[in-house]
Amino acid sequence: MTAAPAHRRRMIAAMILTYMMFGVLLNSVGTVILQSIQGFGIDKAQASILEAFKDLPIAVVSFLTASLLPRLGYRRSMMIGLGLVLLACALMPLLASFWTTKTLFIATGVAFALVKVSVYSSIGLLTEGKQAHASLTSIIEGWFMVGVLAGYWIFAWFIDPQSPGDPVWLDVYWLLAGIAAVILALLAGARLDESAARDGHAAAESFLDMFRLIALPLVAAFLASAFLYVLIEQSVGTWLPTFNREILHLPAKMSVQAASIFAVSLALGRLAAGLALRRVPWHWLLIGCVLAMAALVLLALPLARGAQPQADMSWTSAPPAAFVFPLIGLFMAPIYPAINSVVLSSLPKSRHAAMTGLIVVFSALGGTTGSFVTGQLFAHIGGSGAFYLSLLPMALLVLAIAALRRQSARAEAAVPAAAA
Image (tube, rainbow, N blue to C red; front, side):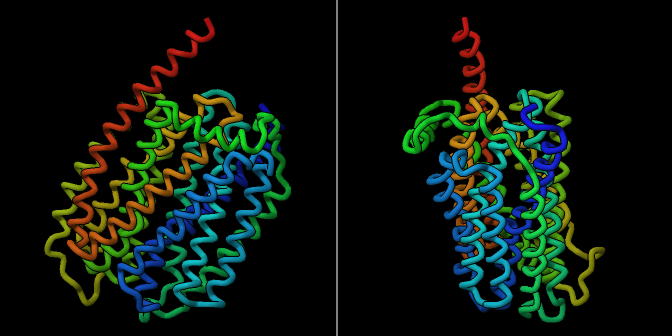
């Protein structure tokens, strides 16, 4: 191993907790959209841009800095990111307004760009071999989804059920600032040998590495897959609370809590994927998952028809669609960690930062596109119609995964040929 066992465990724990923290913040967009509509008096078109305030900084900062982070240091970059969101969280209850919400998501996007590149690049430094790489990637992504799940319930706890728009919900950010401070202290005491991540290239040369990677057919197929996957996941995850509220007529607090079923499904699916991938070829598993996602859309959305408001809505009287549709996360779950591990474990460790930069850029662009398009569709054709149209990117994702499999096989065949 590249790190002593105690330091390795401490660093992995810090990475998991950091990722969980950002799971809470990044996937709070749907809840914040709902609360902003009710508390700040904005409309859906205005609310739909919040995803862009998060994702565009992720894309820009990842693109500009990913190749430079080996020089700054991955552990140090994580600490800078956590410090930035700590300050942004503290400002939210102090300056309660929609523009402060935009500022929070800008800070979260910038910070996550630093954190994701650092975490993904550090996985290669803490593991040896493709199997260990895929395992740790799935574990970290699984705990990220546990953070997403916790976020739904943490935010719901602070929402006043009698007055959903009451700014008391902003007190949640004091708790999040405190959690960020604790993780910062843990990272300060962790150690990571980052020597293998430095390729000795000049800064400009390292920056150009990202463009050279894009030219590789394997990377191009991966980027198409990542873009489409995140487009689908973010369109569902971001707008699910609003779908629950407006289409299924759940109370505001219950709308947020019911959306946590989606996060539970993602977390369980990613943890289970580690076992499934030992027995099933990754490309067949992922294609099967996409087809199952499409089948669930066609099964669940008709159940939302005819849902009516109820004076005393409870979990036992909620429409079946509130429980069935979020299960789509079970089938989404294995896709993202698997395709990331396929491409990263095929590259030298010195190129992981540049590759992760591309992963983050295209994931952010996919997330922004999915959320914005879904928001506009919600406003014009309704929630059910918007989610039905997710079948189109699902069909394209099947084609992208098939292309990624072909390019991956060619890359594997080229390694023995080059060594011969």
